[in-house]
Structure formats: structure tokens, C-alpha cells
Amino acid sequence: MDPEELVRKCEAGELSFAYVDLSRADLHETDLHKADLSGANLREANLRRASLSGCNLGHANLYAADLREADLSGAVLRGAVLTNAMLRGADLANANLSEACVTPEQLAEAKSLEDAIMPDGVVYTERKM
Image (cartoon, rainbow, N blue to C red; front, side, top):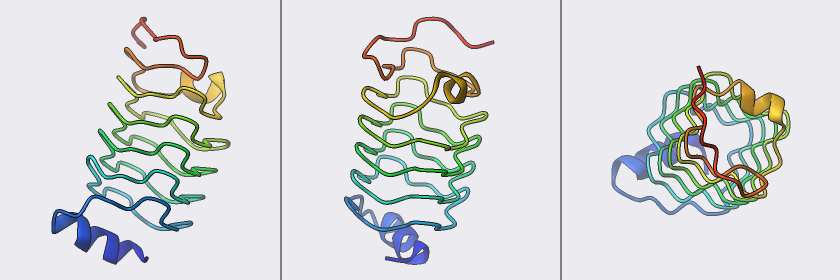
């Protein structure tokens, strides 16, 4: 599936895109709110400033994806691969990051982790200033 087809389907109300291959796709500033992208290959995808709030990205491959300033609030990222992903300014409030492959250094760059479930299963309770 190409990025344009994904956007068209989202705009038509379709939200089920599990296991789709969107590696290296340019989806910056795209509204994918509440889409099911579980198991999707988003390796090196440009998702900068994308709306991914409430998305299911469980077990997705987000290796080296650009998620800067993306809205991932309430997203499910359980078991997702976020190795080398750029998270500067990303909103991860209320996100589920349990078992995700992501470093503390990456998470420190996020805009918010408020009430997020961290990779170790602990809920983050401090606000990022």
C-alpha cells in the first residue's frame, strides 16, 4: 500500500491497516487518529507531526522512524520496535509502551510521558518540564 492510498482509506473511514508495509513512507502531518497499524512496517517512515493518537501500533516496526512532534497520546505501542526512532517533541501521554524497544534517552526527548505505561510496565507519573 502506498501512502496516498492509506490517506484516502483513512479519510473514507477505514481504520484497519494491520501488517501493512509503509517502510520509508512520507506520512508527515497525516491524520491516522485511531488507526490499527499493529504489526505494520513503518521502518524509516516520516511521521513527523502526524496525528497517531489512539492508534494501535502494537508490535509495529518503527525502526529509525521520524516521530518528532507526533501526537501519540493514548497510542498502543506494546512490543513496538522504536530503535533509533526520533521522538523529540512527541506526545506520549497515556501511551502504552510496555515491552517496547526504546531507550530512556529517546523517551527523555518526548514532550509528554504523563501516565504512559513504560517499557517495564510501570506507569510514568512525573510531568516532563
